[in-house]
Image (cartoon, rainbow, N blue to C red):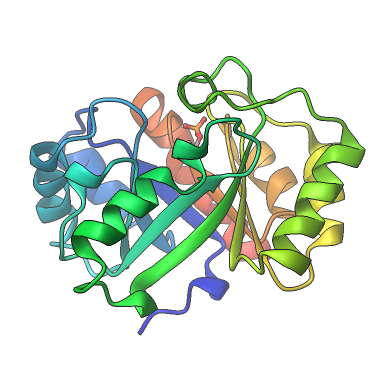
Length: 229
Ligand code: 1GP
């Protein structure tokens, strides 16, 4: 079984976006630690199964980040379940999860399930709008959320989500200093190796998404953080 605590770098593929076979091969053979499939809009059973079967040709861990119940299916190594800590809408805390457990609770292998405490910090992102996240948080706020994740909820993972924008390194640093057990994921706006390295200095794991679709060469270079960490 794979050990997610050793993952330094993840490429996140959006099932609603298209990627050529060549680019997909380059991503999967890049020495990244894992592929995560996930997105905010238009994530369907069809596009998830299609992308899953294409990635499965390659020998690396594959995770689904669940955004709706309809697109969950067997065949992944891990299922990451986000709970949005700074949303005012309980749908995104445990509402979707409740529906999922009612339907699939009896067949879930919980060893494959990773509960992620999400903190969404980019007010302009689709995910912030969709989940009604309260993104105006200062250092004290993010530290308190980190303590909540680490000491109270005991989340295996806390995910600082800046989706589409490069984040505030001071907040990432502050959160990283509060987490002793919980693994810190950082995702958002990483578009070159320097940014990847800066975030990887504090986050345990960085997630690289959008740049895959806009500049594949720069995306591939971000994996080099693994050589220095
Ligand atoms: C999105 O955190 C990931 O969920 C990665 O963000 O697409 O901005 O790289 P980007």
